[in-house]
Amino acid sequence: MWDKTPKAESVKSNIFFKELEASQIIHYAWIGPPTYQDERAVPGHDIDGPIQLAQKLQSQGTRVNTIKFWCIKEHQDFYRSEFLKAKVDIQVCAIEDLVKHELKGNLAEAAQQFKAYMEKVNFPKLTTVMKRVEFKDGFSLFLLLTQSGYFLDTNILPLRNRKLLDFSGEKQFTTSGLREWHRDFFLMYSPVVKDPTAMQVFKKWIESPSFANLDVFKDFNIPLISNVTGSKYERLGVEKISYRSYGDRIELGHFYWVHPDRVDCFLQKRVFADINRQSQSPNLYLLESCSLHYSNSADRDQLFSLPIQTETAYVLSKKEKIYFIRLKGVQVVCVEDCLTNLQDYFPKEDKPKPITDSAVTQMVVLHLTQPASKLHHPRYIKNEKNATYLHEAVLLQRAEMVQILLADGANTDLRATYRIFPDNQCIEVTAQELASYLNYSALEEVFTNHSMSISPGNKSF
Image (tube, rainbow, N blue to C red; front, side, top):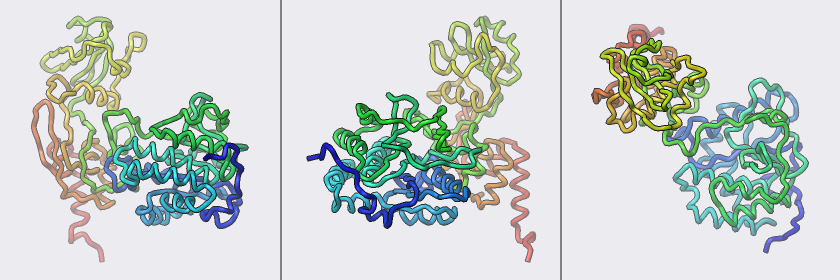
């Protein structure tokens, strides 16, 4: 039976605390293989946050919080190596070791229940993101019951312009969230081992484990971490970065940092990725210029009177229909005749200025070309298999990215398969051949210069 009035215990009783810590501990946990080894994962989602936080704390010159990174036991050595390379002091702990230890301690009943849950879900072989997040939620509660301090999701990063972080502790068990009815798991705090509130919340979760089970925080009058603006926790000096929506049908995974609207982060984030990994890229690249417009009328002459400066365009009419226009050939086709969320991307009647941002137009094209058999859209190219970062950099027409990747040792011999629509033409090419095929002369020059720089005649001794 559960003790209805549990008493807090000294942290000295736990083997993971060799002595009473002088400052609050910060815990992170990653459930699954390292993102470096998982093409479905966003590179760095596992270690970027912990590394940045550790670097910021170490640079403060004041009391430094202990950081513990919890992972599957078989990946401990990998993470120890990564943190060593990053020159940060982060203790890497195994999830299995904590549960095994607690089975012999004063929280044996809770440990036994969590062990039974682990066996039920076949840990560590959790095959989907949602299953891993569910496990992470439950483990974070078990962790704060058996340890003390802060728990942070790995996408909690320091605020860029904040000089000092403040993880000095809260008065009681505390959660993240903007409102009392919307508490969450991604940032929590427990003041002591076997905290009464932590016990109650864990008990409620383990009785009904499920993904995003926020009901476990109800009825306990749990305070929220204070001074929050949107996703920024100003008092602590951190913010939550959202890498994906679990409901999205388009998973970028390995190619997340070469997506057009995030490519400016690539220079910093490429260290977390295997640049020579070959995988299917979901990114779509336009081979014709395109813009988005609004029109009060769907009359053909009215549509062609719009200030279209691109080869193709999509036009949202007042009657909530979307038309595709190709100036060459004077083509107009209705491609969407019902209300959809896509209309949010378009100019409006009160703000009719055309939209030419490539990331926005590519998003619209991506949705309006499903299924791929549709014929009325800008000409575009899409990967079918074996894309690399070098191929994607070519399609982004980013010469500086190509140069960086070549300097980092990108393999120029790797071939990828792409299909061009609506031609339905399939090509299998190296990144250099892709640049040549698309007549990207500036990129061809980058490859040529690189080949010359590494040729035997240019080696210096």
